[in-house]
Amino acid sequence: MTTLANYRDHLAEMRKLNSAASLLGWDQQTHMPPKAAPHRAQVIGKLSRMVFELSISDQLGGFLADLRKDGGLSPLEKASVRKVGKDYDRNRAVPPEFVEQFQIAQSEAQAAWIAARKANDFASFQPHLEKIVEFARRLAEYYGYEDHPYDALLEDYEPGMTCKQLRAIIEPLKCDLVPFLRDLATHGTPPDKSVVHGSFDPDALRRLSRRALELIQYDFEAGALDDVAHPFTATIGPGDVRITNRYPTDSFMPSLLGALHEGGHALYNQGFPEELYMLGLAGGSSNGIHESQSRMIENQIGRSRAFWQFFQPVLAEHFPQYGSGSPEALYRAVNVVEPSLIRVEADEVTYNLHIMLRFEIEAGLIDGSIAVADLPALWNQAMSDYLGIVPPNDAQGVLQDVHWSMGYIGYFPSYMLGNLYAAQMLPKIRKALPTLDADIRRGDMKPLLGWLRENVHRHGATYQPNELIERITGHPLDPAHFVRYVKEKYSDIYGL
Image (cartoon, rainbow, N blue to C red):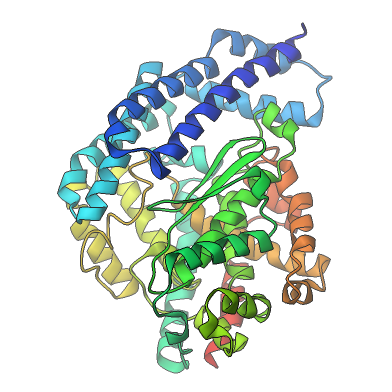
């Protein structure tokens, strides 16, 4: 067999183990009985170690060394060698036993987080989070960094991004958003949001979520929809990309927008050609690019006027009280701007402020300037400083997100970057699809999906995020597109 064939076979073994671990992780958060958590943590830890050992093996190193000198590789094969080789070089510095122990700690922390959030008991979660933070600090040291230890963790989620670059994005963004938020509150006329609230049957909400996913072209023959405490998308492998959602009963918005958000992630993963899976390029360009797909479907589509002109009758099929409702009233109601406690329910204007405070906390946790024990108080102070509100309890505050229990320290900035990437793509989409709004009013999402498949999905991780956004839009990431988008949209809604 050739080196390339052996390399592909090696990646296939890693892919099979990753698929098994993903399936077990999905089951852990959806159907696994609570008493199974300790054993499940051990099993997932073992699988993770096996994958890791394959990812740093001398055999893979030999394949990469040969392929890096091979001038006959296809563009996809070259991209695979670049990406897999980069991961290989980084991970060689990390002991396999560390990976197994970290994965076990994450599985244990996830179970502890679910219980702590339910009981509003940060103290019970604190020792687990302290362990996660210590693992993350050690991982940063293993990886190495030039400026800030957080940079080493960011690289896993947003290749090429650093603390310094994030702060350069955040400061002008904050300077635009905070005054605009103040203008909306003091000079604007807020829409009536009562129309989206009431008492909603959870089974009807599940059916509505499924209908929304069908509308955006999510393939249920290659996926599933399940209940969970915190929504996520799980990619088990080619032909198996699963969505989870939650169903608060006091409004239809959280579950509907949650379904659209996770559906955006799932469309990306369902859009990878199988060859990307075979070459280890099926994770997407970055988490920020991935979030651009979910935030686009959730916000630029799901909160658009055209969407509600189509979807109001669909909503009425599931909740007859909306049969005589106005699409315009629903459009305005789902776009109310106000400080909120829960990140996943935040509006487009305030959402990035939620991310900014999380980034600052994470960076402090990793450089040691913030202690885990101080998080509840620091979180509440940051919420007051950024949004002018204070959570009444930790379940609605520092315990609201699953990311830290999963060891995903460094992920949160990707949400903000996703908003910026999506806003930068939107003018290009509208230029390529001049009938986009008319298509959406008819409930036809195929033209949009076709554009995303061609320009984003099919490339997977072939390009770095900065390369991909410049390839699509012609210039590097620029937050001015997002600022312009929200100011135009919400000035119209609020009558500024």
